[in-house]
Length: 185
Image 1 (cartoon, rainbow, N blue to C red):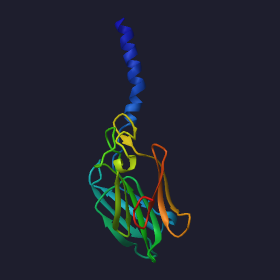
Image 2: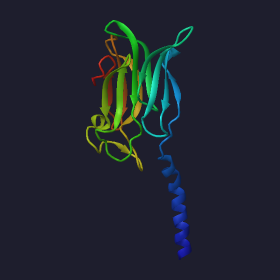
Image 3: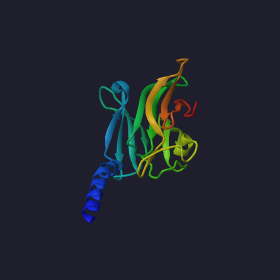
């Protein structure tokens, strides 16, 4: 009888083992993210293996030496850039960063979902609770949760005169953020 229990336990552990390992956060590594057409890029360097401490520098590509446009005192594993965007008649760079993969099973106001920037200026930040609406409106794994299911990215508005950054939430909503103001449309 004990032999059958041991075999069943071993089979259960083998079946659950990969799922538990798949729930482990990826460690932070330095990386470069280019905007469309490679006209600008961000170099993100973490201070630690986990978390958002670090520095991200935004550069514009030129024929000679690349120009530093902005320095941010954060690290993100997920950054989106849009180079040469017009805002109030002036060109600039839109940056959207996502927060780290939050632990737990409920959205809260302390976990960053995403933040929007323009030419180094912070426009707006949204917590996971801002996005989810209620703490339990998340897609939870063994030890972490998500509020986004898909990133659509930058696109022009229907009028064609401005841009927005679009995501899909884990409950199927589509959210669009104004890249000039950071406001949710």
